[in-house]
Length: 351
Image (spheres, rainbow, N blue to C red):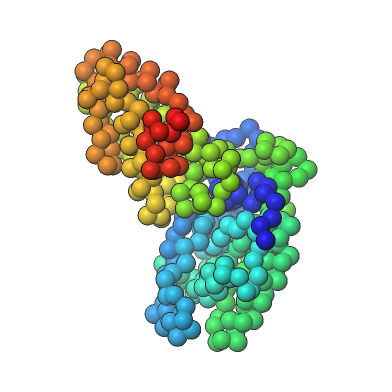
């Protein structure tokens, strides 16, 4: 049964909460010191496909499981020890009998061999499977993880250590509390197993700046309002970047803007570490929307798009000013609606 919506159940909010614990940039006036980063933990990847040994794949097949590797939401690494937090974001906890539990079984078994899972054979670090979810669901989720490990041990599997990252908005901010019952006292992970403040602010004001404003792999799991919030942020950053590139051009010039560069700037370079096939589709959709926005008026037919990039022929200062004016006056909400619904054209999104 679905629980009442709250921000800490939104997958993009959860993702950004995790990123802010290890952030380097940017500065945010409502943010607190990046606790995990201060203790040597750094961001490594989003959506990384983990490695699975041949022996484990064989075991999976014998049980009728898919041998496909899991792709956790966030990977955070303790640089000195190479211990890793393999984080999966969930709107709520799940029971051992749920369909979601199958992903948990694979994460627990795959991460038991961190060298293969993370592509670093022979390194001493451990991989800890962590579920980020609302704090109120932590107790039940820990029980589920314990039950899954007992089941897997009975099947002859070795399991990784695991725990939860409980998120809560209370006491004037967003808080996160890492709990890993099996962690040893001398582990660097033990040092961050505590309640820490991620941002300052009540309710919606507790949102950190979204380093990742929109996640196409999670959009279907968002409410309509949250999806619109995220697409609007992305479109605003797209427009700012496009205006900066066109505005700095020395006219006359052919100015090319690449979808990959746009997304890189819109995510504070995090997209460089993001493995998801959906990103390429998102980049191309951004280019399509920019083309539809710019290919009008006196610069019509001065704009070309070819999947991954858009090129604008700025023959004069008047054309440059016209292009910047079009971007500045563009309807952000309409563009955001078209971005979230690829089947729509911009003129249809206006209706």
